[in-house]
Amino acid sequence: MRLLLTGFEPFLDYEVNPTMPIVEALNGTQIGEYDIIGRILPVSFKEAQQAFVELIEDIEPDSIISLGVAVGRFHITPERVAINMRDSNEPDNDGNTPQGEEIRDGEEPSYFSTLPVQEIVDALKQAGYPAKVSNTAGTYVCNTIMYEGLHYAAARQIPSGFIHIPANFDLAIVLGNVPGWHDRDLLATIQIAIETVLKTR
Image (cartoon, rainbow, N blue to C red; front, side, top):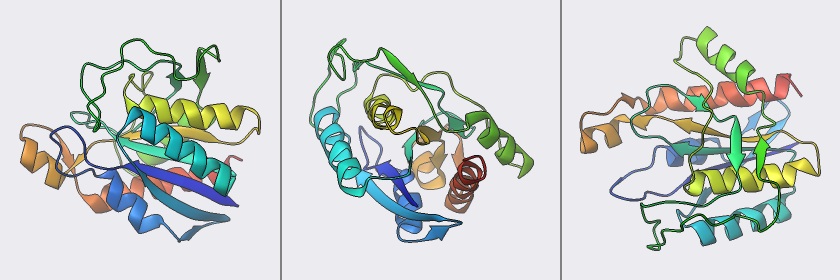
């Protein structure tokens, strides 16, 4: 089985994106029955959406997990829901600031994650990692990617969803006054999440 794992490039004033080393470390590896295919997406509403759809069509994954950084959060936070909305006062890497635009015109207003979000949280806590379910993926590029993954998953009944992670130490040092995790711990949490998805399929 193929699991598509995505992360993002740096954006805004964030010089590093801690999703990148996770995706790069797991790309080409195998976790249980999953062959992990890792890809980095641009932080661009238009380009990320297009690239993600093309990846899905090319790979035809059996499961999808997308990652994003939520600077300021301390917990690993699997997202519960994505909404059909692009809205941001912060520009993407192309300078776009969409205001109240639908991701897919006239399509479903929202999709709930088909990842076992509570089971992932429970497994992370059992392993000693702070984790909790998040009920908002925002309306930035992360939400767009989560929505697109779930739009694909809806017709195929596969696990798909999004997990926000805290800053790593490198990013926390640059920004100051935000929680930071070691890269190895961030990597371990995503491995646990993938194992949990596999167990609950």
